[in-house]
Length: 475
Image 1 (cartoon, rainbow, N blue to C red):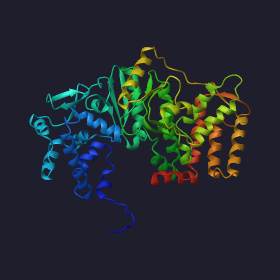
Image 2: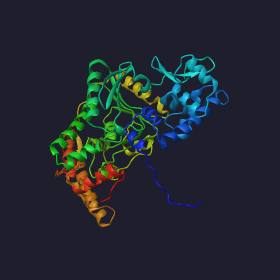
Image 3: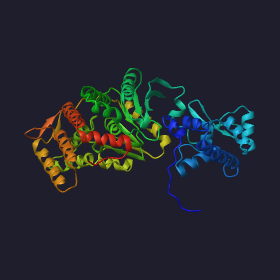
Image 4: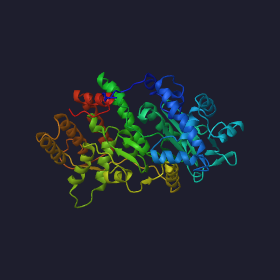
């Protein structure tokens, strides 16, 4: 009957389940774990399952409404009936009875009729079990949804360990990521190139989207760290060049490419969106170039693209340094948009890009945008060779500002070094006067700066901190 220190509880079973990315598979495995954590999950789940079955038709005639309410109101990824489907309906009923719980009679009737799940996929659509008619029905309003979870079983045209290409119909392919946090590695690079190749041969557009919790947390930082710590700079250079080439392949392909970001869209995920023809973003999208926080600059074309966009926005009479400084500060302070709307203000989204409020409609609306671009007579763009950069004049401004920030104690010496590298790329290098350069010229500068920073001890310390603690290090 006294207060004691808080203790952090750890279960070996929970650690073993962490590598399972798919939530449904993870819940299925968790339901079979025989320890205190598993007992707790089963006890709470059985009570929940019993409760929700008895609320139909008391508070709702249809079971999908209860799942919708729990997902919308409490932020659950899966509602109670979806969770029950994941762990297995029939076997869970038997386990519930053994534990002293009993679902409503309609569940027994459903199982006796040979219906094993509360939801099913049928003709590319998701249906729910209706207890009144005792058959499956279409969820109202979802006729125009494009749900990858439904299409994944029948419409996959190509896949590898980290990526799937799914036929959405109407001549549009979808490239779906399924790595941890959807981090971009060699499998995804391969999938993006394959998707564009297939679309150019037999389809008319590509959507890049997924139904995970986040669009992409960026490039595979662990791989960057491994190459850098082993001083495998040739391998690291090849890895970054492949990423850059893939982004340029997306931008200058013969078919329209539409990105459909949602949730965290950071680093490489943001760079991918910057190089798409259109972005159809979920309203809850947190988009940003955050590489500065791990001691490098955006190396997958992000620095080049933001410089290009700034150059394209210059108008006669503008004080060009102001526009360039604003973009520099966006990258240098690793700003992340708090919504898709703010992504427009930060320059990550442009006029013509769209926002989707309902995540279930995101892929469908991105697909519609790809069709619109294709039917409008999409033509292959040509690489830019007229990007205006400021040369030494702009570079001097940024270097002076960085030294002043360090002298004032606002940034560290390493922050200043990264700032100078970023400024060097955005100003086009050591040019004696404002000039026009090509995209490839900026990409080469960007990659060189990225590689040189990977050779810095303090950069490696920052990367290690993110990988081990998940927290940025200010050194």
